[in-house]
Length: 234
Image (cartoon, rainbow, N blue to C red):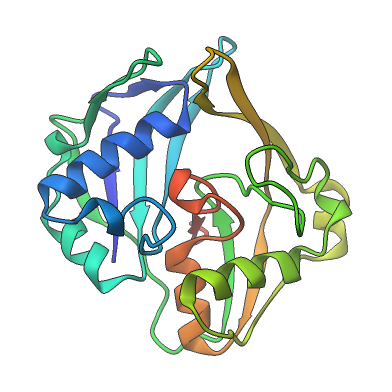
């Protein structure tokens, strides 16, 4: 299940990914999804991406929100969500209220597709193997085996081995990778937690079920925090 919230008539001014995560969780809670299935180590896989324009002050004007999941449980919640339920007044200063937005079904790949080219609605966050996920992140995309990193994360969320590979052509890897510093959250001591994330066109190849799972679940780390949400090219 994938939905798109059109916010063009009422853009949301957001600094932290964590704020939108909280707003979506609040909406899914209203839709009857239990907290343990949305957040924490036993949570179901889901991801989201915010589209809009980044501002020099660290905020972004968000004009669209994509929410995606391969989980039947979370999908039932997404079917029920109303835009006005997506709201939060965070202690970090972000205020989100999607009342008045329009809700659409998101674009999905065709059934049975074993090869899929994707872009990203939210940049990809990559954790080095064996590092603390809260403090250690890949700083340069070319410094990691991204194929293995993405597959490892997907297999953990799916709870099984996956027949899938990820690739990008050499020219894309040389000049087509965009690096962004993303405001993840505001720590209890007031410090801003900012992480390096990447966007680029990728190709996914493998078993159709696994390709579809990857598209719906997202790639990389902290997908439920708003990272690594694939989208189809226009």
